[in-house]
Length: 108
Image (cartoon, rainbow, N blue to C red; front, top):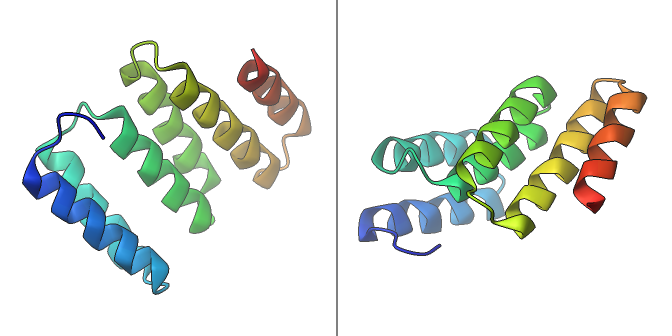
């Protein structure tokens, strides 16, 4: 993550450690702290969206990925990954048509 403060990097490292040890709820709390420090980081919002998907919160995951897209400022790879995540969230919600639309946007 470019131009990130040491505090945010430390929190990301801790969140990754927590994810690796299966402490998803703790990782989410750690990422929330990082977002409070750097609220305009599209990468942080994407990572939080991924966690919410793992926590079986597809509605929240979709909203967070959309927020990441707003902040992505032309980062095509991140925007593509967000649309793929949105597609998975919609699949989890039983929205096959919405998932297909999101996959099409990810492919663009």
